Length: 191
Image (cartoon, rainbow, N blue to C red; front, side, top):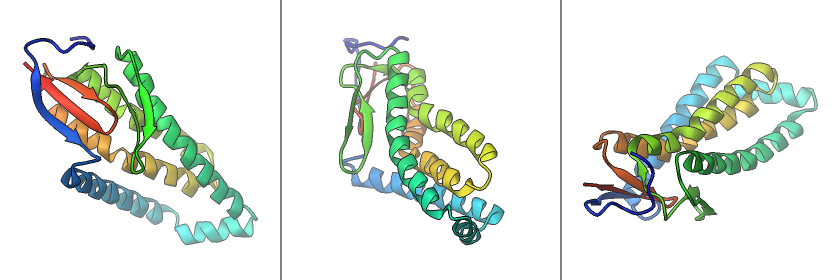
């Protein structure tokens, strides 16, 4: 099935996922994000102690540079994450993508496109997969800057908790569904 801009006549709404207004879902997503982030922190801490790394960077006179790289990297990453969703939407047949920030979430979305299940899952997971690979490569080649890259990777995976949550919900649905994702609200339709 292709992405469409007009909902077929026999399709009706079967559910809505609103991570901005549905407090229960927002709490679930934030708990998932917290668990992922904590687990990733522990994994890295077992490899390289954060406090030892901070001391090492301070001794080299690089701690301020590392913090600046982390702050700048965070801002750039959030923008690139949403652009990745937007590019994926366009690649999957979307005609219009809007970007924004709600105060709680940055988003890419469309109020004109209905994506089939498989395409929507690709859209949802595109940033975590793409940037996960980029950060894995950077982790390997930026010796000494492990924690900066790892914090960005933690943000990538933990920050994708909403994308992962929506993917899991959609994955269990019929293969004939169509999804409209306006950014923080996903409406699912089926025949």
